[in-house]
Length: 432
Image (cartoon, rainbow, N blue to C red; front, side, top):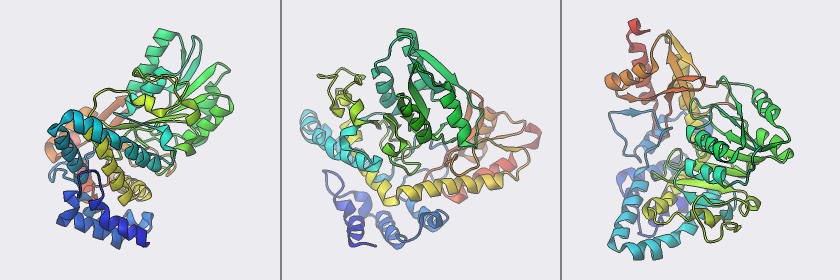
């Protein structure tokens, strides 16, 4: 391990934020996590993915329920204790003297947070705006683009509902044309997906909307290949990265998109109600902000942050979430989540009536998985899993996609997934 890396791990607790040392890293659990990270520093990500001792230590950094197995992290993920502490710390500070600490102290911390997010995204800080969720980020783009009646937008019926509704609103108000694709996921061949998009492009196509990871079943779309074909034709590219950012290991510019929006309270485990917008530098000026800004045609990314009063505690604590994510490592996280998916699915396939509705190939899948039991009602089964076994999942029924979604996170252990497997095997046969 390099000297710089050792110094980072040992002094992180004393350098996180404006308010001094984070209590978690002075606790036995915090010190244990730092020691574990040092001890495992040289282990390859693929090998570490299977080491329960390491991930058990990571779980101790969270305050998750010891009795309920949460397998709906795709909705919103819990924050590690160090992030919770930061939110509470900054909130207490704000309440001591709101207009002073919020506007004159914490507001000045936005640029360091922006720089941290840019480092994580692999882009310039001048291309990152901080907002509250993926919907706000993406709707900034959807409503901010200059489109005329008859301009075409290519999207899919499996996209996220908020984005679909935003595009429908533009269709109704501005007369743009929505060209819908519909897939029977899972699709294992990237070529099939790319060709479906490119076949829909015409000389009137101005925008393509790509959901990087389909939230319903974890299908990973070949966003870069679609984007490359679109940009060759002069088509602008929007990527919905709500479920890819900090679940998959990639840099945003590598996707070759013009716009990217994500929620940070999902896979980054940042405070609830935090999000991020990426806009390619040369696309900032012509994009109008969602909220009024003094210079709406400015090339400054900060014009997208004219939100008025917001929670500075939530915004500032994003920095602690980034630090925690980097301590674990993007590649390690990606490999662990894929390993957990493979672990439980491989065993579940032996259960009579089990049906798997997510991609099997490495490139087209992630840690999200969708399943059903033959003859079982998804709503009833999901409710039964929680009621009888305290395993929390979510039933899905959306545009050719039906089942129960399972989304673990880095604090999820194999023994947690074994509870799901035992529960599925225990599900009464007469209900199938």
